[in-house]
Structure formats: C-alpha cells, structure tokens
Image (cartoon, rainbow, N blue to C red; front, side):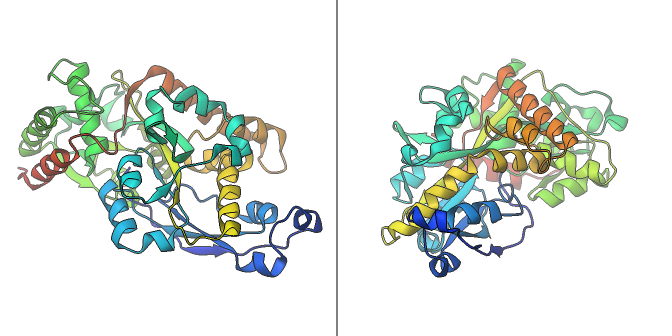
Length: 390
C-alpha cells in the first residue's frame, strides 16, 4: 500500500482514571487529560473509538494522517519535523533499514508488551528466521509491533470477466483499456514479477528483492503493455480505486481487499481473486519514533498503546472494519463478547481471520518495502510512469 485514505484528524479525549488505576502509578486525572500519544496512521489502524485505551491507560490518542510511500516516510521524519511530532507511526512494515540507519525509530522492548507473548501469529509468521521478520525486525532486533497481516492480489467484476485466478488477467488483451494498477513498485511491480516468474516468462530469481536488471525486465514488460493501451490508469488513493470499481470504469484492478468491501457497500459486485501464482504477503508495523526528550511517562503510555494494538478488542474491531487478520486473540474475544460484537459480526471476524491464514498457507511472495536496488526500482518505475500509452 502506498497512499492513505481520506481520513479525519481527531483527538480522542482522555477519560477519568479510576482509583485502582491511579494506585498502579498511572497519571493523575489532570495529567491524563493532557497526556496524548500522537499516533500517525495510514488510515486502517483507527478503530473509531479509543475510549477503552484511555480508560485503561489514562492517555488519549491524537490520530494524524501519514502517507505510506517508503521514501516519503523517511523524508517526513528526517526533514518534516516528524521526530518531534509523532510518537508512533503505524504503516506497512519492512521499513526498518532506512529508519534505523537514520536514527528515526527505537527498538521495541517486547517485555513491556504483555500481549506480545499471547499473539501466536507473531511466532507463526513473523519470528526471527522467517520471511515475515523483515517486516518488524532488523539485524536481529525488533523495531515494529505487527498490527495487521494480509495477502494481496487483485479484484475483478465477475459479470464482465467471469472467474479469474491469475495475475495474467491484468495483462490479458481481452481486458485492454479496462485494467488499473496501483502506482507502486512494491505492489504492482512485485505482483508483475511474481506472475512473470511463476509462468516462466522472465528469469527472476527472487521477486521480493530483484536485481536492477531483473526489475528493468519487469518494467520493460509493463511499458510494452502500457503502450498497447492495456491500462486505463494508475491509481494513487483508496477512494480513486474504489471509484474505478464502482463506476465500472475498470473490470480488473490491482488493489487491496478492503476496496472490494467498500465497492460492495455501494452495491457493486466485485471479487477479490485467489491467484494461482500466490499472494503479495505483508504486515503493518507500529514503530516508536525516536525522541530522546520524551518523558518516561510518555514512553510508558506509548507501550500501553502498543499493547492495546495487540489486544483482543482492537484486533477484533480492526478485522471487522478493515478485513485484515490482526492477532490470535481477536476471534475468541469476538465470540465471547456478544454485547460488543454481534454473532454475525463474530462470524465475519472468524471468516476473515481464516481467509487470511489460508493466504499465508498458500504463499506467494513477501512484499519488500526497501529492496536492495531501491534506487533502480524508483528510477525504473519513473520510466514506466513516463512511458506513453496508446
């Protein structure tokens, strides 16, 4: 994912803190009302109600929008005042190398996060030595707290296309002029590489970290398709992609699964594909922005928020509203609390959770947010965007 949703910037006020909480050393009421965590999010991490966190921690959450493009994230923190503005950034992970090397984030002390050990998905998919570790760790240290996990593919309108099960649909001449790609080399570029490799159309050793020449091969292929008129547009925002589906301006679109739900809510039948080549696997990560002037009290509140993000209520809520798998406690919590999650909502949460696990079991390729040849990627993608279309 590259671009944020349209979203509100709002402050969730801190609620009253009970005497029992105060006895535990949390802030006084007066201090709690002013203690805020600046939580920068790309648009999928907002549960819509932070009162449970506030009641438990005595801290409020100031939700602010942040983009998700890798270079833009680094630039915002380096030159945009982000180090002093943000406490936590919740973005698609895999950004550790440039963030760590520029001193922009702190390592995570998992011992301060009780829910870490309760989340079996971390051990299953993101533990050190597994491909998913690259989304939360760097050089053996953990820097990100995984908030959601997902596997991406593409969407289509079955009434116009029939059933589709291959990324080849994005490049099939029968859909010429009715295809859209995301303007993002870490998604559209990698999915194209996965398609070319799986179908033996190009020599690509590792689609998740291509050499400069391999990625040039991918872009050459995309430019040839672009010049033939295959692509109607490159989309760059959530709303733009949903509108392309709802208007039926495109029949096949490289996109995120929540866009299908958004389109269906507007009365359009769309299907998120199960491609035979596999999925683009990824995880979001919440990073602590490095700020040596941050008070211990603020740091304590930040860790309380990170624990909340791995908690069962938050996980169930985000799964329900965003169609992402979150943590291993979410399904059981939704089933056990009908006052908070209706039975049909609990069933939906369980269905989504199981569906994403199936994607990880099927496999594919892990998204690479900062490939080794990142400069070549950016240069080649710019060449693709500048190429004329028919």
